[in-house]
Image (cartoon, rainbow, N blue to C red; front, side, top):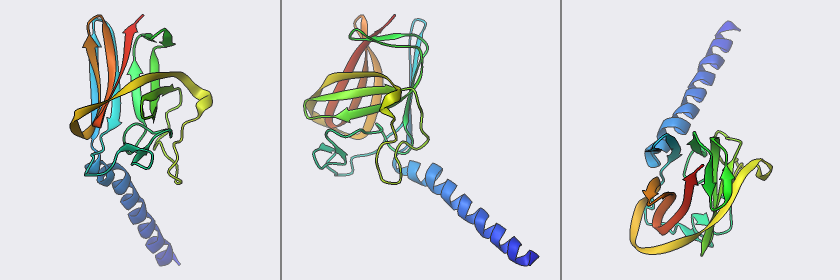
Length: 184
């Protein structure tokens, strides 16, 4: 009987190790981690996300990898995380200092950018649907999207200074989305 429990224990450890490997190492080899570290005076912003690649796929479309009108975890693997040490102003809407999960709803002409107070581990459920709880949204803004000539193979999030304001940028395929903001 002890031998049976020992074998079952070893098998369970092997399965757990394999699942950990797949979740944290294997999947990230296809969509590596990305990090944005932005500072402007005393303002500090960090974004932590995973960077999927285009690989010849149709990305933003009605039936694309990231369908129009559906919530996207804004990256791959885990939910993307946005941190700010100061209150931010996005076109008259306030985002308090703190840590948020970052979601988007891409559209043909504009995107909704969502900062949510909850940070789920994976970002999507087994059914492939986003694990965002709309009741805990801290801020939802809508900004135009731009189609450009240059194609970006890997999904990129950036924070840049643009004159007196700053911009939160999302770039992938031929799509560019910029959300201007300032610190309060």
